Amino acid sequence: MSSSAIAATLYTVREFTQTPKDIAETLSKIKTIGYNAVQLSALGPIEPRELRKMLDDVGLVVAGTHTDYKRLQDEPAKVVEEHKILGCQYVAIGSMPQEYRNKEGYYRFAREASEVAARLYQDGLIFGYHNHSFELERFNGKTGLEILYSESDPKLFTSEIDTYWIQHGGGDPALWIRNLKKRAPLVHLKDMAVKEGQPIFAEVGEGNLNWPAILAACKEAGVIWYIVEQDICQRDPFESLGMSLRNLEAFGLK
Image (cartoon, rainbow, N blue to C red):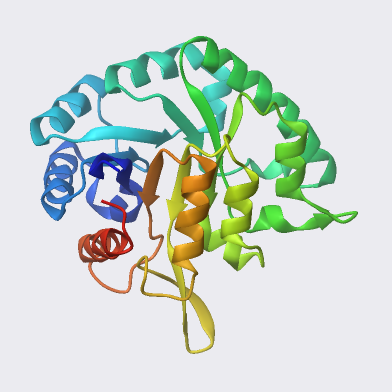
């Protein structure tokens, strides 16, 4: 496996990506750590062409983005243009808008997002959904996340399973990834530890998730980009990104 299959999401270092100068410095640090790819998320204002030049200058590619759902609905042509400039095929949303978070809303979102995904697909982009744990609430025995994937177009509506949040919601990350075989081009890898009786975010391999099972499921499901994320770090976030990368390499991702 090429090392470019592992990416770092910039959400982890969002405090250091709010100005063009900071973005350039952050990209350089991430490359120095050992990553060859990033996922764009939570950036401050910057023009796509300027960002592309920064990426090219340090030798990073864009594995994917997190893009606001309303932008995908209202200005798909502009989103497509930006992704073409960045050389990026995968566009995911970070979460479902609040108004859909009920039983009827999951069915409605699955249909509407499939239509949004179809428009993007016509221009070469692939839509993905990044979960948290609220989607594992059950409605008549079926979780919201199950509704999303059963009621959406399987060729257009893909997944970005977040391992921490699936575990947080009482699910099995490996099982979810495996069940979404051929619909899982992206996965968010983060670990869960316990501190003073409460779950906390941890670097990959530094918590309690079953990484051999998760990574085996990723391989079986056809995951393309293994994206490291940590919402809250217990140390310098760049150090955390480095720890996760080294641990993934120790698990056999190279």
